[in-house]
Image 1 (cartoon, one colour):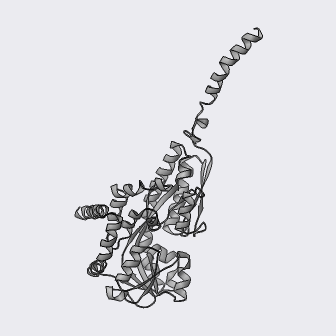
Image 2 (image 1 turned 30 degrees about the horizontal axis):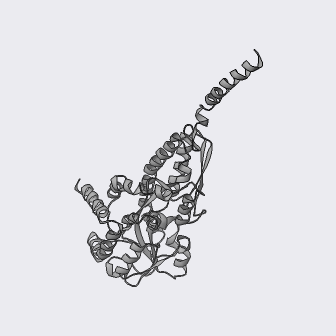
Length: 348
């Protein structure tokens, strides 16, 4: 073959060879995004509670599922006890692409997407099943769909549970018993206004500071789900536990959109499936732990009282102006849709 012919053949063959070499699953890319296959990755996932908390147990399960489904290629590195910061700080880290996953309470999201405030309304749900119908249905999905434009992806809701009240002064059995109590709350406008309406003195404070504040009596009490009361050992600095069930708080599993967009469809499916399976597991753990928590706290010496359904209705009526005020802010149609969904569950 003469030199001219050899150069001509190579000019024709080389482009074809380059195209063929780029067709493997591991190297097919569009705009830098791997479209197929499972890559070796490490996911940094942080939460505010301890590993022994139901939220922590959910994360352990999530790690197990992701690593199993990915054949060990995707590793999940869990960070507990707010090691990476509080809920808001970790959410902001996701938006910046500095962290991959967190599972905060929905409350800090209100500053980003006001509609998430509907989950903060007191006395909306009486039982967990009512909350599940809202969170796992159309309303929950509507709010998840608002996350991507803010740099976040939501893979569903886990359970924090019904919030209960502890304090060092006296049992809270009626609305009047709230009067004068200095109660630590989250920095949440609905909660602040609701406790003010009941005559309490709500005091916003970082979660990490609560135990010390209760111990020094700079606040009289706090409100959190039972699992948190147990794992944070509030029984050591509080005498009374009142089962007010005043707010049902969900957790939400968030993924950094910057990270998510770089995953293949197969990898995204692994995370989504693992989040759903871990959610179901975590909810069961939470409900079981709630049953055990009452006994543990009673044995620890706390005086525990229930609040009658009639008194809960009275409290709900007192704070109705707060609910009406924020229903306008968060979306009256959305709030009405949530109420209708709850009524549907109660009717069945």
